[in-house]
Image (cartoon, rainbow, N blue to C red; front, side, top):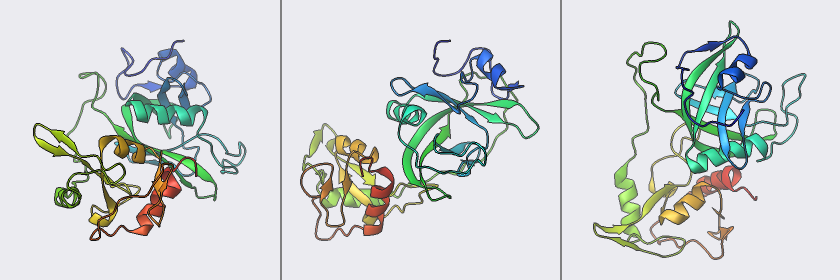
Length: 270
């Protein structure tokens, strides 16, 4: 069966399935065992939340999903470090390329329910509850791609992070909109352009502050590379993964704890 990204025609949110074989037959999730469907080349097209991993966290519209591998098949406990390979790498590719991911949940009463489309908003590694490194993926629900199908929608209140743009503007102004890594200043018809990058991400589960000691002024290229862990920053401000040192204004004091947080979770080659 060919891999398909996005909504499955005829399958609305709330559709239920007796077992994994029915999920496969409907085209919602192809593997009958693995929780991640995808490839390291194409990306991940779907996942199943089965409650099998002790570090999973499901809030409905936001899911913090634990990658695959390293789990004892009998006890369900994590007994080995996870690697960024196979399904884990597929989810990372979906994050990079912005691909939609179908999500199905295992129901307490038995069977499975199609929960809709999500996007991979972030991925990182951390120590799990059992003391082994695991890969984590934050998925955020997308609007329904098939209006009118599935259960009736009810209005709900969703909390979101509102960024303090004053802090971001102050940091960018401090550097005259020049990237702290390469020194480039991008000029547009509307004026100079730079991006404020958070060292420790905002929102759950990271809870980074929107303050100057957690912000960098970067060009778009280095912002993306930093967020994806292509380079990090040492406590001595040496760039890790790139040559040179971070350029820092005398009045800009970065919090070493935030730098370490980024290194420990995002610096892939560490």
